[in-house]
Image (cartoon, rainbow, N blue to C red; front, side):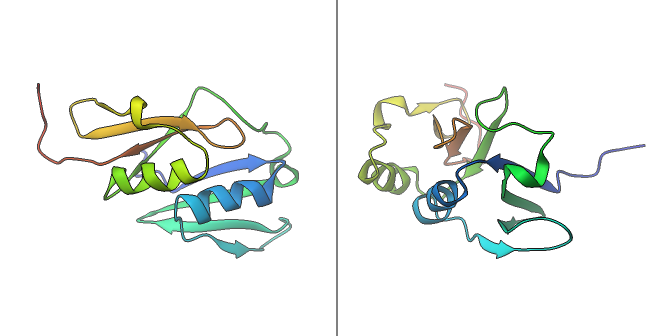
Length: 128
């Protein structure tokens, strides 16, 4: 018995339009509308071998929305470009950028309070 991979991350929300705007228009995820099975309209994107999706709470009533003890980290090619785009949306994050030894990162909450992290991943570890 062995887990082979993470195949999906699902976020539930009561604010579908606001969350789709944040992840698609601000962060640039290529979200597409999806409808299948008995599920209401939701949005998803394949990121490598993993599927990322934003669902209305009605699709997963056993779940809650908002802040939990989980953080979703996204690898980005230019953290500075994201900081600029987020700044235009009212997120002031420059002072929160830190280097954890694998490249500059910034953590903040999405509109529902979920913690996310943007990482400009460096493949050579910096021990300083």
